[in-house]
Amino acid sequence: MADAETVKRLALALPQVVPKKHFHLEGFAIEGKGFATIEKDGTAAMLSLDPMTAQQLADEHPHAMSIIRRNERPIGVRIALNAVDEDVLAAALEKACRHAASRSR
Picture (cartoon, helix red, strand yellow):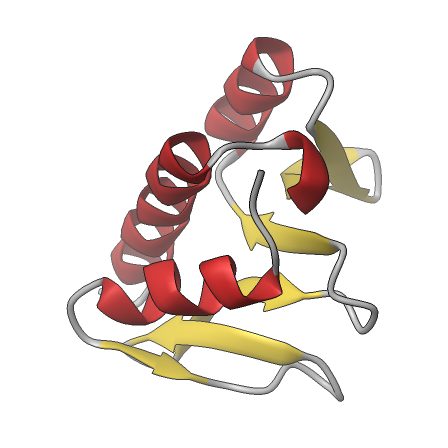
């Protein structure tokens, strides 16, 4: 089981990742591109991902992850932190970080 502090620790352990607010929410970015945000109450994290990876993660972890959509297009996942273990969260954060880095090139 993870929590907001786990998200912070894992995200900031990734190379070149810095804290970056997304509106009023605590978030993380690489090369100026945000990839993770912690919801205000700290119970969930939102990760920006390509549609295929978002769907794959949601399919593999339906108890913990759900698709975030914009205009019907998958843009990431929402992770219920109390339903995911640290290893799964770390892998998802790494995928989101790589996705954000690829968008900045």
